[in-house]
Length: 490
Image (cartoon, rainbow, N blue to C red; front, side):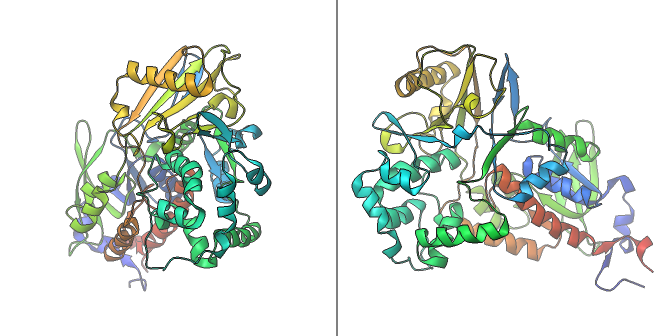
């Protein structure tokens, strides 16, 4: 007799053709932080899983290299502990003693204005006293609570939203550089509803950013959540790749590297499972999976979905990922330059520079440079200047030195120069992005057992991906428990 409300996979003859080694509760495609976090949670829940990664390593953009005594994070250099869930996750995977928190001075961020580095104000009193904004801009901000909300059906860019509510100067010298620093993006193209959802929600729910921020702060205290402006910044003793390595070790028996998903056969009359054809170096295997999770970049997921949903595939293919060059400069001894007394600096578009900003790595976390030395990471390209990352290493090195010499009064070239180019760096949540997310949700409803993840959905940061993995893995576990083996049927 069948258990009510459950599917019994072994009643389907084709499923029985697969060796048990090739039957999986869940197959995850993509070994970046999203795929790793989902795989870990599913395995911990008792599911029989497989993670498929096409390259020779897992971790995606989590990539740390040790070069001549310097610790070089080629991708994300840190993440924010905005939710207790992030800390719990780190403790679960055995990294409780490996986390390191940023130097308190790293809370200070600088913005380049008229060739000078000016501190970004962190509270109302600093804002009133700061030199970054004019008196006119400060008075304009005081008017924000009295500006009516936009019609709900209107989709604005971040630039349109901020200009309307806070004024052009605040857009130019606060929002523009931070959008470049977070997304490597252009606020004139990003959707405020998708890329700055919490800010958008303040206007929608409270009619004002100021009023909303006050009320939300009280709510966060009750929920034990932390705003990004107050959240603690952390990394690991051996860099961000330590997170990927910890997950890879736990999942060692469930990861197939250098493997490519060639074909997906959807569930049909022959059974309630996905048939996957996977190519490896010397063989091709077929796997029967109760659930299939794509945790790949949007353009990669688009290719897999082309035969399933052409409309969604086309939308995902259009999600922009601008190129970014990450240029690391390591100095084995102190050389003349301005004090490294903060996180680093960001560059507004109106300053007409060739860099997006620079992080002062060794001022943020310990053990990033040899004793007596220091190191910096500079970002180039993005939506602002997408052609610059194509310069050769010598040209990029000269470009960075020239910019830092002018901005930071740096007098000597680095002892170590390391360049990492990301051809497709960060997904841009542009106008219409929510339509793509709605179509993803529709696809998941129409194809039970198929799930889409990745940092193009609900947040781009490492912390966002970890938090999202919890809710998504819960849905996957719920789905898979509806499919029980014949031995469990009474």
